[in-house]
Image (cartoon, rainbow, N blue to C red; front, top):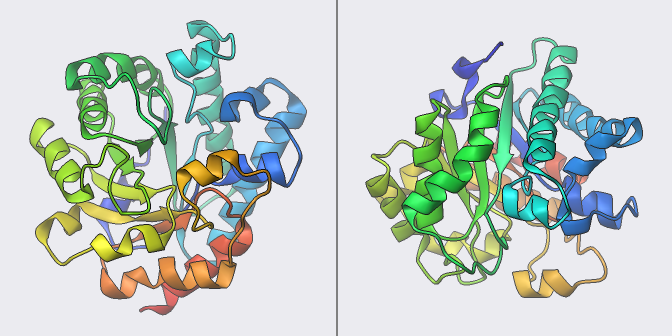
Length: 312
């Protein structure tokens, strides 16, 4: 089992491309239904695997073209016990999907040769990514997410990323679970239009709470699934900002509640998004993970990465 942890983003200042917007692109632009917003069932067929492989290959080739590194996130954001049960998948089914998801991105890394590539096992919140309910304690979250993390620990995954996390206790539990299985972990919080977590907690407080409750074991933090206009006003030059490594932004300025009921994809303006996301490196030189989430595609990624590279 080969791992490449020398390439992890926090070890240097190289730019890493990170793309987590394929789900919305698959639904709205390819016309493929994804019940439960789950892409991992596509792994069940050759056609589905080829669709996913195309996204990863396109991202890797863009990274190579622009001379940056790349993070390949597995399509397992909702491949946990509760979200899987909603789709009638058993724990054995989910284990298989999680393993196959890492095998797919590992095969893409092998194909791309010497491109600096990090394989990331992605996990998401236990419940809704925008409106958290049935909040868990830190201990409950650790126990719950340990199931998926244990599976990743048997694969080639270099890193785990917990994305679109809505509250600090769940994030701290994820970090503790990752430490249990000796897996590097990053936490990516989602924020609302006011820059606060869906629970109302300021991002600064959430990051500090997670660090306090997990002995600072998270490698770094990100913000994802929000437009830059929603969070850049809360960024400061205080010490907590050095725990942030970048942003993976939505194309749309819409709130999460508006996006939930949208019937058409709001792809925003790729050039503008590139300027806003990529330009953050000028203000925060340690930001080296940049990319797109909901509503983005390779046009947005190209603009973001070109702008980020132009800073230095």
